[in-house]
Image (cartoon, rainbow, N blue to C red; front, top):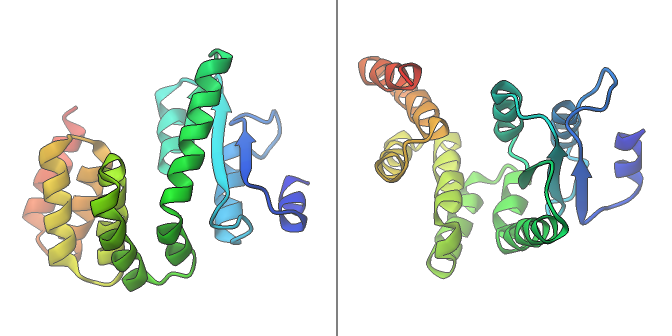
Length: 185
């Protein structure tokens, strides 16, 4: 029903709970909307949920919503986070449009254009740039970008992306080292 509604109407904002109390959950809904390219590039997608189990949170974050809000919260917090997510989506729209078109060279160009003007989104922009480099088989450049990001933050997604990039270049020993640092947390 929700998928059909999204096909018929274009929304600027979708707020979705993770648990629908049905066979389908919010993660699966977002994945289907992305796979079928039903949501326009400008649509902001926010999870609103009481689920705080780390496995569920990780799966929600992995599907890359624009934001994830854990209940309970107050009106001011909710409003500020929605506005922030919508602003970020708007600023990064050129990247999202190129990603939707699977134009990875265009993604790299968009990131190069946006990065000097939006340092507040630097890590996210660089994440998309590195992803596009991998898709374009520019593994050396992607590796370099992921290594720079990893020096700034010790996030699992960076380690995973770096390990996958290393595997693509047959640097299996280094990939194993990165993955072992991930599993030793």
